[in-house]
Amino acid sequence: MGERAELSRPLAPRARRHRPRRLLLFVHYNRWGNLADYVVYLLKHVRKVFARVVLISNSPLSETARTPLEGLYDDFFQRENTGFDFLAWKEALTREGRERLAAYDSVTLMNDTCFG
Image (tube, rainbow, N blue to C red; front, side):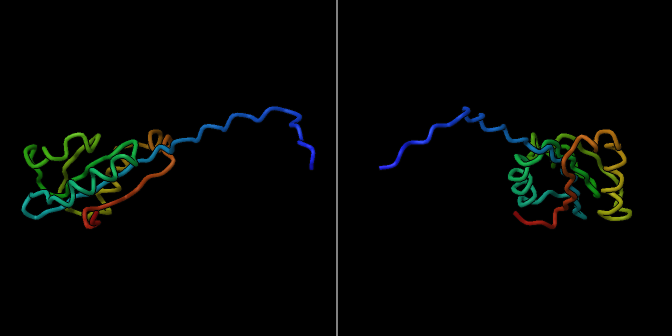
């Protein structure tokens, strides 16, 4: 029937996809200093998407309360709940610094009102 066409050059190997470097700045607040199960669930499932997770608590959160989050964040800091989430994100961005932020493809601002 028809003739088979021959390639004039070999096909180039498929280029490797760039894995995006993503940063998550996650703000937690609980007036009683508790950590809800859904927060652990949420962080467990989004962790695999982000190269770095910074957990910011706008309320006291003891080391014991943070135990279920072990391995789900790279950095943690507590602060007073002044300025709410917006000031917490601003402080986290300042702590990260322009140089480190420039290394990321995206920065996600999230709080614990997101349910997984």
